[in-house]
Image 1 (cartoon, rainbow over the protein chains, first blue to last red):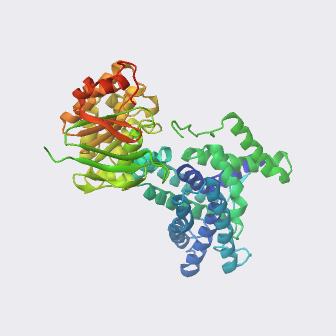
Image 2: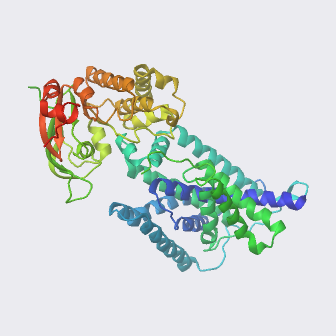
Image 3: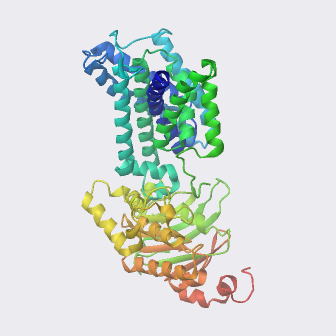
Length: 304
Length: 247
């Protein structure tokens, strides 16, 4: 029981981090109609940008059992904004030009592969292949349930993730830009006819997706470490989460992320860890066979 | 004669540059006027409307609204200039609620205060009570007629000077067709000019002030809507009169 409980706790924590990264992929795919394989590198960039800020201001005094303090929080906010700007900058430099020239969406997909490689190697160029840490503080796992131990940092990450997802959900429901974003996701032409400037919606999409990717990367870097591979190694999990949940759906990306995290962590109890990813993708195929639009996806009318 | 609101002058436009569908069409719409464009399939009616609102590329010619050049402007700027557009298909956001559809339509009211937004929403519900009843339901649950009402209400949120409707009665039952045309006249009574493309030529001509007949992307016939109803050439081709093709 303890083992299963621990696997579920680990799965939820991994899943929360994957969810944050998957939201951007899901929204980009819905609004710009292409799979952005460079998105995973935004996680890495976010993690390293926070590392740069921490290098200047420090991670802050450890508080409330966490391994960090206000310094890292400030770094995370700054890194999220910078990563959003980076995502938008890449769009201006590459994707926007391709969109305007009427490129096929597969062209954008392949371009994103190339951009992803460049982004990863720039990280390696500056910081090398080695692992990095935000703090050298040691943390003691707390037994929250019999046999289930979690780090205070992990609890913090989960709480922040829940708060962000709830805030984003409310924003998409009620704010002017949130409604414009959902309108554009369904029909760019009708959105334009409503006076919505699609390029502005696209910019908002990059800032949100990039910002959340940065937080996801920072959380991976906190538990336990940062290296240039963190984004790349999560790439398939991020796509699995976005697709399983249903493209363009916020609850979909969150539930998709949790399912990926849980599947990976619970499966290792019964099958060899070598099959971890294949089990997760087996589950993805099963979902898609039963519900091709994903768990929360909506079939669009008049989508031609 | 009153200065026209919309002037389309020798417009050439199409989906692929060099292969225009509209070959030099000229039309005008005066303030508060209801103008209908009819013509056989492939005459370029829909393309003309999309070119006016900037959803199709203009190759040559000029479009002005109250004297201001809007040729080739991005759609959101044409809307900002005072044009509301209701496309034929996909005319509502099905994944959004009725209220959210109206808020999307009010996107450009930003910065003019929450009170104005609320006022416009209430006005839409007063004009179309069924929308008020269903304000929290997703637009996908609406019937075809209700969707058309929502689409018109959405286009009216910014109080445009001109509303452009692409086949507003397509796929509706005869009773609803009549209701839509009554609504169109209602818009004109509120001071809005209407430019619409219609397949239901007879019904549209009865409720319009003036009309244009397009064929093969060119102006063919134009005049007061009533006179077109009596025109033998028009009646033969569109109004179910004698079976004689518009040669």
